[in-house]
Amino acid sequence: MAGLYRIKILLLWAGIFGVADCSYIVTPFKTGFTINFQNAPLGNYNIHVKEKGQNETGNKVFQDTIHRSLYNISNLKPCTDYEHVVTFSNAGIETPCVPLNNEHTMMTNPMNEGDIKPGKCDPGYLCFNTDWNIDSVQITANNIKAQVMPCPSDNKIFCIKPGFNDICTDLTTTFKQCGNSSFSVTHHISAAAFLSSIEIRQTYPEKLPTNIEANLHQLYPNCTNLTIDYICSDSGNNFKNLSELEPFTDYNCIGQIKENNDNIKNTTAIPVRVDCELKIENKEPTSTNTSIELSWTTTSRNCEKVLPELEKLSYDCRCHPDNWKLGQKSGQPTVNKQPRGGTCEVSGLTPFTDYTCSVQPTYNKKDVPQPTEVTQKTGVGVPEDVGKLKISVPEHNVIKVTCPTVKHFYGPKNIYIATLTYGGVIQRSQNNSKNCEFEFKDLSYSTDYVVEVVAYNGHFSSKQVTSQTVNTLYNNKAVIIRLSIFFIICVVMVPVFYKSKIYMKKHRNSQDVNEAVMLESIASDDVYTNISQLHHEETRC
Ligand SMILES: *[C@@H]1O[C@H](CO)[C@@H](O)[C@H](O)[C@H]1NC(C)=O
Ligand SMILES: *[C@@H]1O[C@H](CO)[C@@H](O)[C@H](O)[C@H]1NC(C)=O
Ligand SMILES: *[C@@H]1O[C@H](CO)[C@@H](O)[C@H](O)[C@H]1NC(C)=O
Ligand SMILES: *[C@@H]1O[C@H](CO)[C@@H](O)[C@H](O)[C@H]1NC(C)=O
Ligand SMILES: *[C@@H]1O[C@H](CO)[C@@H](O)[C@H](O)[C@H]1NC(C)=O
Ligand SMILES: *[C@@H]1O[C@H](CO)[C@@H](O)[C@H](O)[C@H]1NC(C)=O
Ligand SMILES: *[C@@H]1O[C@H](CO)[C@@H](O)[C@H](O)[C@H]1NC(C)=O
Ligand SMILES: *[C@@H]1O[C@H](CO)[C@@H](O)[C@H](O)[C@H]1NC(C)=O
Ligand SMILES: *[C@@H]1O[C@H](CO)[C@@H](O)[C@H](O)[C@H]1NC(C)=O
Image (cartoon, rainbow, N blue to C red):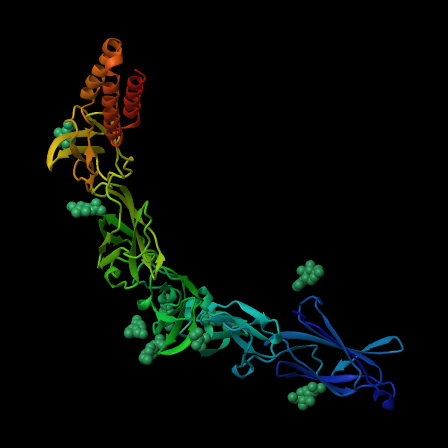
C-alpha cells in the first residue's frame, strides 16, 4: 500500500512572520505520526510520508487549506519505518523544512489489542475494525494463515472467513507484527451467526417413512449440539412432520436447525415426494354368469412398511367392455380392501362374455400407478327367449315354424329346438343350429298340434315359446280323389247322363263348394287356389 503521504498546505498565518525557515517535530501517534510545525511561514507545504525503501506508487496527495500547526497522519503500518519529507514552496521555490530532532525516518507504534475492535460487514465473516494498515500484519486463525478480505463498504474493516471446522468453536485470531511480537483475540464462532445453510446438502430416500439426511455434522464437525427438525408443507399449506408424510403428495420441507432447542437457522427448502411404486398382482379371478370376482395382492417398493396403514389407498375395479367405473352405475363394484391387497366383485355383467378387468389403485381418490389387467370370461347364462313364432301349414300334414334369430345365446352352442306336441305328449323334436326354421312333415291329418321352441346353448335353455294350436289340414288326397271322381263323372259319364242327371250333379257340386269353403278357413292360399280351380272346372262341367 501507499507508503507516502504528500500534504500540500497553504499556511496563511506564515505571512505574519514573514518568510523564514520552516521546522517541525514528528512524533509517533496512534496509528501514524503527528507533524507538529514549529516555524512555518505562509505558503504551500507538502508533507511526504512514505515507507522506507518503498516506491512512491500509490501516493495519496491531499491539500489542506485550513491552517493549523498539527497534522495527524494515520492508517500506517505498525512497527514500520517511514521516511518523512516536508517542503515549503513560495513563489515557485521549494524549500525543505527541517525536522527538529534531525531524524528523517521514524518507526510507527506497534499495534496492540485495543486497536482491534469488532467490526460488522457481511454475515458469515469474522470482521475487525482498526485504524491500522494491517498489510504487514500476519494474521492467523487457530494457527492457520487467515485470508484477509477488505470490507467493501468500509475501508477500516477487514474480515476473515472462519472455516467449517471453526464453527461452534472458539476461534483465536493472532496478529503478529514487529518480528515476533503478537497478540490474540478469541471469539466464539456461533452457529447462529456463522453457519451457512446454503452449504448444507439435503437428500432423502424415496421411502415411507422418509427421513431427510443433511450433511450438517459432516460439514460442521464441531457443532455437535445442533439438530434439525423438518417441517413439511403441502400445496394446501398443511404442515406435517416427516413421520406424518403421505405418499403421492408434493411437499416442501424446511429444516429448523436447533441449538439446545433454539431455532437458530433454517435450511433451504427441499421438495419431497414419495411415490409408493405399487405393484398389483392379480390372482386367478372367479366368475359367475353375471359377475367377476377379482382378488389381488399389493406390494410396494417404497411404502412396504406403511402399506397397511395407508387409509387413503383404495382400488377401482373396472371390467370392459361394460366399462364399469366406481360410482357411475348403481351396483358399483364393492371393493374389499385388505392390508396388502384386496378383492372386489364386479356384478351386472353379461354372461359368456370376455372381459378385461383392471384393478386401479387410487390414493385420495386419484389414480396412481400401476393398474393391472386380467381377462376373464363370464359363465354360461340362460339364452334369450326366442321371438314370436310364425307357423304355417304349407301343405296338408306339414307344419312349418320359423322364429327370429336369437341374438344372445350366452353359451357355447347356438341351437334352436322345436318340439311338436299333441295332447301334451311330445310327438317330434328337431334341432337346428343354423337358424330358427323347422318343418315337421308327415303329420296326422286334421290334428291339433302345439309347437314349442326354445333356444339352447349347451347348458341352458331359454323359456319355451309355445304356439297356439295348429290344425293340420283335411286329408287333401281324399279331397283330390273325391274331386277326381267328380271329374270322371263330369267328363266321362256326363255325356252319357247329361240330360237326365243334370240336376243331380249340380246339387252334389254345391256340396263340394261348401267343403272347399270349409277347407279355405284353415288352409294356406295355394291349397285354396287348387281347390277353387278344381271346383271351377267342376262347375264348368
Ligand atoms: C519500484 O518501482 C520500480 C519500477 O516501477 C520497480 O522495478 C521496483 O521493483 C520497485 N521497487 C520496490 C521496492 O517496490
Ligand atoms: C490529532 O490528534 C490529536 C490527539 O488525538 C488531537 O488532539 C488533534 O485534534 C488531532 N488533529 C487533527 C488535525 O486531527
Ligand atoms: C522470533 O522467534 C523465533 C522463535 O520463536 C526466533 O527463532 C526468532 O529469532 C525470533 N525473531 C525475532 C526477530 O525476534
Ligand atoms: C473441530 O473439528 C475438527 C475436525 O473434526 C477437529 O480437528 C478440531 O479439533 C475441532 N475443534 C474443536 C475446538 O473441537
Ligand atoms: C452442547 O450442549 C451441552 C448442554 O447444553 C453443553 O454443555 C455443551 O457445552 C454444548 N456443546 C457445544 C459444543 O456447544
Ligand atoms: C409428528 O407429529 C405427531 C403429531 O403431530 C407427533 O405425535 C409425533 O411425535 C411427531 N413426530 C416427530 C418425529 O416429531
Ligand atoms: C424458520 O422457519 C420457521 C417457519 O417458516 C419460522 O417461523 C422461523 O422464524 C424460521 N427461523 C429462522 C431462524 O429463520
Ligand atoms: C346364471 O346361472 C344361473 C344358474 O347357475 C341361472 O339361474 C341364472 O338365470 C343365470 N343368469 C343369467 C343372467 O343367465
Ligand atoms: C338335439 O340337441 C339335444 C341337446 O344337444 C340332443 O340331446 C339331441 O340329441 C339333439 N337331437 C337331434 C335330433 O339332433
